[in-house]
Length: 229
Ligand SMILES: N[C@@H](CCC(=O)N[C@@H](CS)C(=O)NCC(=O)O)C(=O)O
Image (tube, rainbow, N blue to C red; front, side):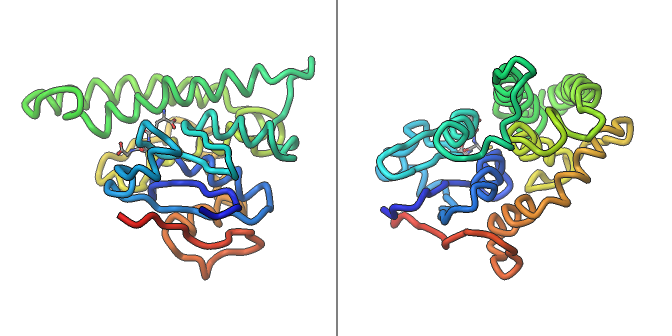
């Protein structure tokens, strides 16, 4: 495998947050857009035995789970301006939000988007409707938590915002068919979207997901990596 960091992703998936963080590093890196077949391979499973994206291979280091990838990047690279500390110099806010995103918000979207993973077809519509109610509770909480600058923490986008954007975009698009969520009641959330969509790193990460590399600007993206199946 390459000596550059390689991030394994699915277009439209939760791996976008880790992709945005790699863009912020401004070091050469590669992306592997995985297929179900690739995620079955021994080579991919050696990076993330759970078979899921995001998964990162960085030299001899391998790490799965977006929360862990983002903290790995924060620990191993100079990205301090994207990891704002509390007044006491700690990372509590980062830990708290990353944990919330992976343990609460991500499942809330999964319940809404994939009801038949949880209940039989006959009960799916009712389940989805209940899941939407639960999702709105989370979106309202997030809307009330986003700060005056339109971010989760601090005055500029952090690794928390990167991961939050990866998930919250499922409200309005990204391979999720018609299951859109009305966010008109959430002005801070709308401000957050506008902030994030304006960032070069976000635009680049989205272009890489869609294999539109001709759109890249000031990116260190070093090409797609693939695993033979
Ligand atoms: N807790 C994991 C969740 C990972 C996850 O569910 N990834 C999905 C994409 S959003 C995936 O890999 N799906 C493909 C599959 O299940 O085969 C994380 O936050 O990294």
